[in-house]
Figure 1 (cartoon, rainbow, N blue to C red):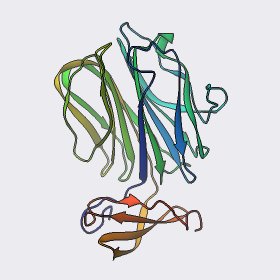
Figure 2: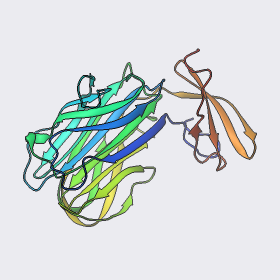
Figure 3: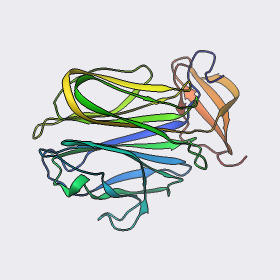
Length: 278
């Protein structure tokens, strides 16, 4: 089974960070941002979203993790998917088994080398990903005067982490997102109208759809990618001080999780003393 008795999903641990790069109308042509990746992280995924007041071409370049504070050095990230439509670019980048550090992510050049007016990112620090066989599936959406943002990835496997990123050229609100999705970034701006969105969910079957509904029509670019995870095997479950505490086996880790809502959702324990000991 992929769920506990009360329905909480047995999922890989995902810790997210989000930031505006440079501020509204900053005109950036590169960026550096601080990020912490703890020991035991299997996968680092970066969703990048940018909107300019003029058309762009191509993807970001020289996207890296663990750089110096000025962006020098570091480990190259791999592009999973990128799409540029008019003034918007959305892309997803990743690195397996990233170096554990309190360090920086960086990109050397914006799409087409423009002085980008609006940029946001969402970082996903993932434990439980199958770093040796990520089996990445991707898709994209060209958004043309639409309110429905929809991407369906096929194939996916139950447990996959599925991540999307959107950049559209209108300050439209997001009235709803799909079932099971966790929205990490939803930003709009003042200097150049835009809506940047990134979210994730766990796949539960062979196809996975991520959706957002806008309050009005917009145009731009959307991408998504699915990353394989190791199966989680439940070992034990008990109660403590009003919370549920579970133990699972995940690859070479024995991990514990807690739930304060009767098993509807689970949070990985801060200190895992038996990680990498199997």
